[in-house]
Image (cartoon, rainbow over all chains, first blue to last red; front, side, top):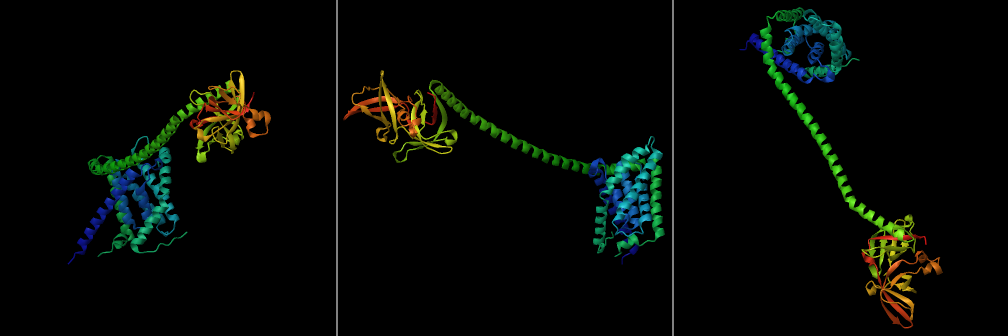
Length: 179
Length: 293
């Protein structure tokens, strides 16, 4: 007879490994293939995490933020946990502010990406400001934050629609749009 | 089997907050420890583990970029090859044009020389087609009324060391072409004169296909002094006695040939004339469109 608890652990382990592998693929793809769009890197990890916060349970996305941040730190040479903190705070903020709004609203992903990006880049700037000498907030704002936000806004809505369509296909739902 | 959606979303809000808070706390602790150098070996291990994977993917990406760049280079090389082929074709055409230009230059110089030594203004033309059907000797030339050619105009040419000599008369004119009746055609009738010393003997020159290119000068007085070797030229009598006739455009003193033989035919004399030029060998002619004499 099957042991439900053992079965759950196996499922959890498999799910975590699958999530980590998927995040490694996403981060590698972001670092290798998305570094030359308009001279600014598209933060695919941030985009996916913020958008999925709107349609997936927060614990799932919190794990994405944590693992994704660690993987990103490992590949970028930054301190471990630095990007995880920014991503988790972005997820929490977006969840707290927008969780009561229906995910069928098309404006929602734009607002979520703006909020998530502000929190993420603010957190990163704060940590860098605290640890790196000679950090210039204005330069970070004009060179990193503004271009990063503009670039991430472009695919926000198509990516959100794609994620929502994938979720509805997986659950057999019919998407309903609210304008 | 357990539903995965319940695994994701079936927990309470407080539990969610605890999990998220725990992850945030772990991340914060990891960050603080790493800034202190405690987790440096861990980070180095993770970096060393992931770097080969990133390098491999990056290498694939570079090769793909190189392949794409190579494809663009191939397109560029193909375009350059097509351009060079076209230039090569143009150069070959120019090289082929050089002999044509030399021939054209030679003909123009020849025309200039004739115009300097004779009171004629000439129009050069290529002989397009020689019509020898039905025993006729008519050729088509490449100029017509658009160049000022008219019926009755004399057509001269040169062949090797011959002087510029009459080869025919324009018989039909089109816009950009004209038919020329050669002097050895049986319908050709031209007033001519033969010089024998200071004496001038006039007559009518007719072509005859049966005499193998030899022309026959008739209507000559029986006592006229004509000998072999005398030169025969046009007389221009039509211009004097029938200026409205087409052949009035034929000026006098155009060389035709030399007397080959003479014979008495009843009350007149008949002279066989060997033309300077065999009209069948002519490929370029000049039309005398104006005589300034």
